Length: 228
Image (cartoon, rainbow, N blue to C red):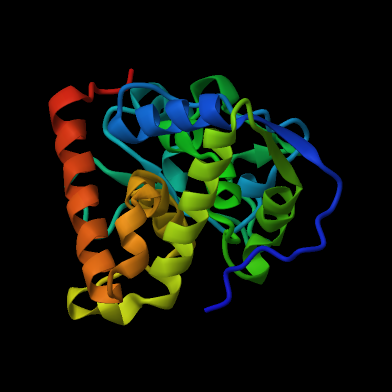
């Protein structure tokens, strides 16, 4: 699977201060805050063949969405819904280039931040994610400190390891979807800041990633609060 971001970047778009962004996105992963994505005119995530998950807590959204667009979410408890996309891959709620329920948009949409792919150094997917991939290539973080750059490099190393060393994980159970790879790499990047990792085997590094992921999830269940 080739998920590497091409070297030839397009027009640069400011992604913000990396350290500030990382703090915000980690808080978002823990469920205690959200992120503010400077999308501008980009509608990549709205035009990239995504099924949109609607949670039972999205009461305002459920009321704003025509019932004909809501279907039960397979494999999830009762009350969870999906909104599909049109034949051209556009969100069914995108009208005239803008979200028709923006003020009541889903938590899934509020949480989506394609800068996670830029942070991980990977693309969002294949040809159907071309619009997002373009923005992923355009995003440019700024760094207040050299440590922030080191952390960013650690996230990229984590993502690269996950992609290239799937067999090192027990049962080969490493993430495959680019979004899952990027999120895991961000959560466990601390593993790749440890000097001893340079002498560890792939299996030992995979075990360290699993431990770090479990520790992150434990902190989420202890400290996280439900988004409003």
